[in-house]
Amino acid sequence: MNTTSTTAPAPTSTARSDGSLRWLARAGMAGPVLFTVTFVAQQWLRRDTYDWVGEPVSNLEAGPQGWVQQANFVVFGLLMAAFAVGMAREVSGRRLGRSGPAFLALSSAGLFLAAVFPLEQDAQGVAYDPGLHFVAGVTFFLSSGLALLALSRSLAGDARWGRLPAYALVAGLLAFAGFVVMGTLVIPDGAALHPYAGLAQRVVIVGVTFPCLVLLAARLHRLADAGG
Image 1: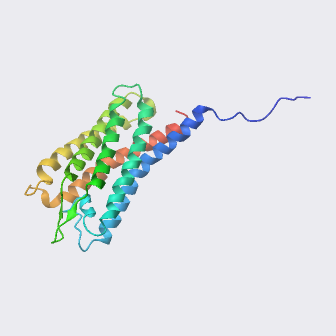
Image 2 (image 1 turned 120 degrees about the vertical axis):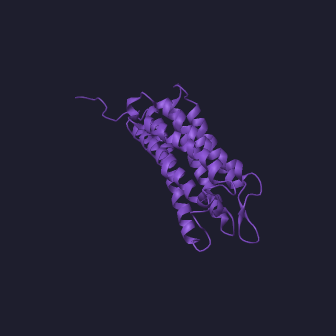
Image 3 (image 1 turned 180 degrees about the vertical axis):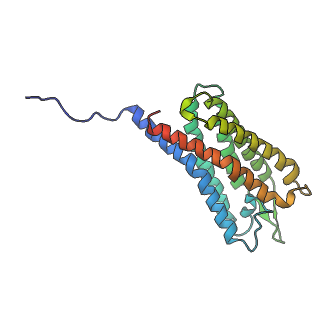
């Protein structure tokens, strides 16, 4: 009689590692989507007093309901920090391997700063920066663009990532260009495009940066499912 055990072998440590990587990738997919849904819902609920074309997302922090956007920044920051850890595991040892995840982590730090140093509202109901919120914005937008550029170089030549490195390169260049344009022609008071500050910001984050981050996270999740 055959007495060989038919019990399936226990999961290996690699399988457990892939499982945790899937959750880190899911954080990267969920972060931009959840953040966008939350601020769009807020701007719709406050449509009588908030002009999304002229006002940046951060202006949602001003006023009695500002805590919602502060919480939105914190949650997004936590999810992006988790995604940075996941990407660090993927690109470890490659060219510029630590740079991309480091910039992702720095962008998450910018989100935390945006929550800690929120915009406030004056007696006329106008949002203003009482101190360091500007630093938070610079940190997030600059680091996000640099993260995409660095990741595009780290992932280049890896067939598992398909055309995503090229896409990340283009998105990173556009995000960096958007950062420069916003800093010179949009955000400063009196700048030529200042009346469209909210629209310009949304074009950069929702139209350029966020889709690329979500696609990178989705591919990382797929690779984790396949065991690398």
